[in-house]
Amino acid sequence: MEALLPKTLSTVRDNEAAIVNSWIDSLAGPGSAWQENELRQHTQEFIRLLLQGASAAGAGSLSGEGWSDMRAYLERLSASRAVQGFTSQQTAGFVFSAKRPMFSLLQNEPDQLWALSELIDELGLYTVRVFQKTREEIIQRQQEELLELSTPVVKLWDGILALPMIGTLDSQRTQVVMETLLQRIVETGSEVAIIDITGVPTVDTLVAQHLLKTVTAIRLMGADCIISGIRPQIAQTIVHLGLDLEGIDTKASLADALRLALKRSGLSISEA
Image 1 (cartoon, rainbow, N blue to C red):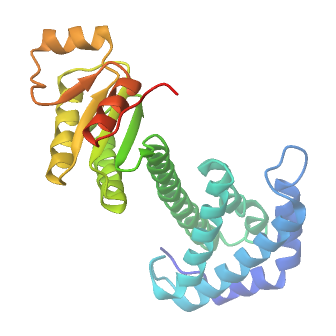
Image 2: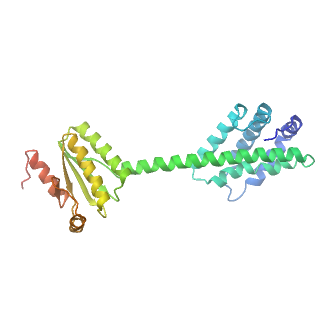
Image 3: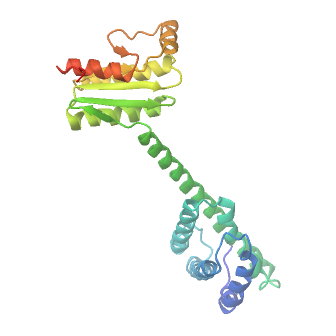
């Protein structure tokens, strides 16, 4: 990346107010994703950091120490815009839009015009990369939160836990189910865990394997496991697939599973 000459940096510095006003005019207005006071703050900070980085780094790469403050600023900008729901195009567009007001000052210096264009392109592409990384982290965190919300462990009685499952059971969710349920078993000292699959739409070989892994893990913790919600369609599917659930207690409903769990605990349900 070609360095910006001291003369070019002085030109930008001396005309900062005009650049900021022209830059704001190009981005503000009806339908804009920016507020004018917010734009003024960001444009001024961007120019300050650009001059600081170009003066310190010379022709160095954007990954150099001289550009650390600029990188940190673009990372904060990208993270805040990602959280607010803006797109990478809208975020990087702010950086790329700096070209027009700055280029008007360098019309008679084509070499410096090209050097400034390369620099802004690098800054814009860095913004896109950081934005995408931040967005992926947000999506991953939201998925993890949804998994946790979709696997609530309920204490039905002293020593009896229930895990109602809704939706498809895959490898990732099975891991969350096991970790959540085993942790609750340890915390409560429960002896019986009920896994209710009434809300699971289909049971295939893979889903059955995930259930068996969970049951095995529960037994290794010294607790019993009951699977409830075995509907006629699911029972037929299990038989058709030739799945071996021998040794695992299954019940048609959560109520039946609770009744069995209470019986194992030496309790019974009777009408008042």
